[in-house]
Image 1 (cartoon, rainbow, N blue to C red):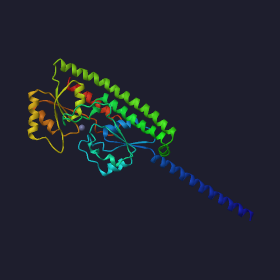
Image 2 (image 1 turned 90 degrees about the vertical axis):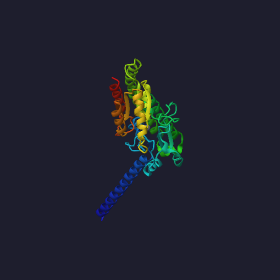
Image 3 (image 1 turned 180 degrees about the horizontal axis):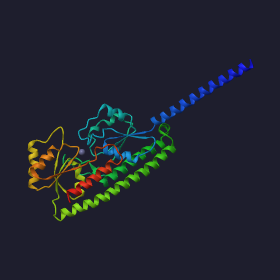
Image 4 (image 1 turned 90 degrees about the horizontal axis):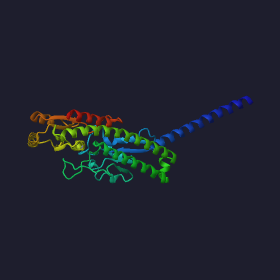
Length: 331
Ligand SMILES: [Zn+2]
């Protein structure tokens, strides 16, 4: 009888321990998935903003970064939001945009997401006037690495302010993480930002050397400084190099250039004796090739850093490629 009792008690003890362990384990898992849900979700408007944000938030736990548009979407001049995009936006805490009108598709859309914190990267940046759309800003500022550094600083400041607002708002703090987690995030954000700015700064030095060379050649009249560009993006680099953008060919897939417009561009190139055409990989090369055939002006393909494989060094690699191409063109 006593032996039976001991066996029964041991059996009960095993059951209790097992049940207790299961409860503990389930609770822990729940907490972990809760924490994942409570991380800071950042959505970026398009590729260059994504790459920038990815760099400054690199390896920070509790921060998740997604691009609203596909990495192959390029510039968003005529973009339309999809249902998938809207779903992603509805889950975001922060939405980071380039500004300057490039995110035209957002007009009226953000009113539907009152809880989202929008970080605009354009304050303090003076934009060139668009040659494609007279009277509007040319928003492709990231192609000037010095302006890109200002964008990096604006992004960091915005994210920092958001995290500090969590620290002061108890409701948010309970949901989004503790004060100590937030201070870890802030210090990593700070060091990531400094590291990335240092890399871009090295690029600025390299680019300035090359741009000085180009300016030297053109001011001494060894080569012409007149160029034709396809798409406004190249204007920032052209101006830094002292190049004179005589004409910007508007590339618009929906409204292809008419025969008359192409003839006009060809006339200008012949009249002004333009040797350099700067086109972009993401655009159809039919027109630039045709202009080259008719005028003899050389076509150089630059990378406006609006598409890529999502790697952190995408921007740096694209810009180094552009430095090489400009050096070759003006050699
Ligand atoms: Zn563009």
